[in-house]
Image 1: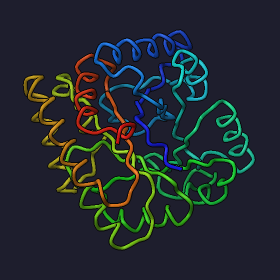
Image 2: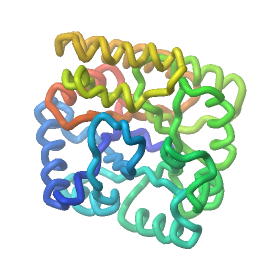
Image 3: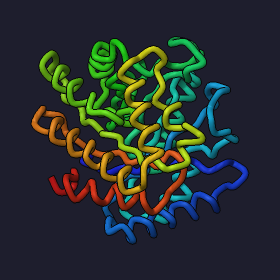
Image 4: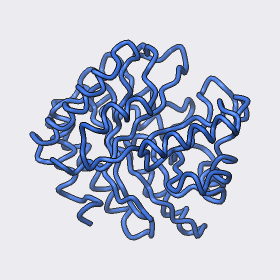
Length: 297
């Protein structure tokens, strides 16, 4: 069954800050949600498993808490909110991966997104279970099995179709800074019978993006013209006044929702503040939900 959810990305605190920081940030989410008029609307915390990637990451990353520990700390602070996380399967053999999935499910993780190795490694590396194998093998243990969907990536149609064949029930899109996902889903719907739930991912662009360019780094795909246009959109908005940034992202949201509805895919939302939780981001999310929301569709 579709989750029909509004999920919020909850980046694990640094290990050195521990449980206290996770609890503090959970309470911050509750406060900002209430102030923005979207109290009780967030249904999942999406806690990514953070691993070191390219050395050119524009924001240094210290060792992060495990998503399971984050959920055990933050979850009790947010009654009615469920857990969701990403899991790199390629670093665990079958025995360890089975134990990991059991622990996540027993802790209340409702959805698990199976992801591959970081960009510094080639597909097939890691020595563990490839995510497409895990999708097929853990269908009983993990009812809600997610994958990452990048609509601008070359050959993504075939890649996504194979993941669905293997057992994916939902997809989390990369941060959307164009309406490329609409054309992707239209073509995918015309060519396949798969209709997994799609978590459309939207992220706030703060002014600090001008200097650090973290969002542009996150969505990078060197040589991909469509991605270059998205990066240019992000760079332009980072320099714009806050109201213009909000208006243009909300307008993009409306175009995506209008285009994606009616194609047969259950739609959910994933909101992200790539730097930190801030009031303008929650105000933007609240405005988006006034236009369309899965819990009121």
